[in-house]
Amino acid sequence: MAITQAKIVRRRPLTAAARSFVARRHVVQALSVGLLMLMPLLDVFRVDIAGGFVVFLWQRLPMTSLAFLLPILLVLPLAAFFLLSQRYGRLFCSWACPQGALNEAATKSHMKLWGRRKPWPTRRDRRFPQAARRRAVWWKRRDGAWWLALVQYGGRGLCIPPLAAFGAVSYLVAPATLAGQLLSARLDQPALWSFLALAGIFYADLWLLQEKTCRVCFYGYLQSVVSYSQRTGVRRHSELKSECHGCSACRDICFAAVDPRKRVWEWAGRSNDLVFDECVSCGDCLLACDDVTSRRGVPLIMQLPPAVVTASAGDTNRPGSR
Image (cartoon, rainbow, N blue to C red; front, side, top):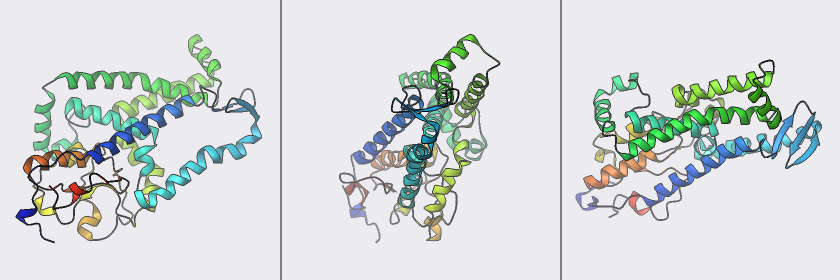
């Protein structure tokens, strides 16, 4: 159906449903990070190798109990996300992956601070020099939001890696024992070296790698494969492509460096066809599109991801909405 002049939107409120979706996703991400780090510290679940027992819900159980605890705590949740990914794509990466949540936060901090995904110019910046120059001017304002982003970035980058490493090693070593080894600098203990190695990996991940680690994640690839027959993720409205004037706001804001206007099935008329789909339906590109199109007086070009319940925002996605 052609979009006529009578159907062009003159002014539209921001997409409240999409903003609510993004906020809920961030809450779940924070809870997943906190839960993974605190479970061994609060004796919710951990394995004490030295003591030869398992702690589950503050109870000591024999090592043989791992035979039914591991499927309950690890296999079944991943299997559930794997099945849900058939319809929603990389749902685990978007909502529940602790590493993905930290990588996303770090990359977005870079974008707020420097206007790009890294403090230094990347190959992507050289490929799109116009956008790079636009962002380079933007970040030099250094207003209150810039300084807040700097504090958040510094605090998260300095504190999260050792805390995450301590929580990870605590799954196999009693937290009190590990803390004593750290305070006494017992370099002859494998647990201490494991802590240092993991902290170094997490530092490199948050400061240097970010979304690059998500691109080599085997579980992320499996989710992309299982959802290849579905058109998952945010995309342009099929009837509104002509309204897109190429501002690239959706591409510039994506922390995963995905251009939502260039999905395989958009021009090929088919599914992703086993292409590694890096879109996690975070919804940021839709909000960026909403900001631009509402000021231009045109309909919202990007479509909400399938997982969003669009009771209130459904009207704003239709070409004839006002």
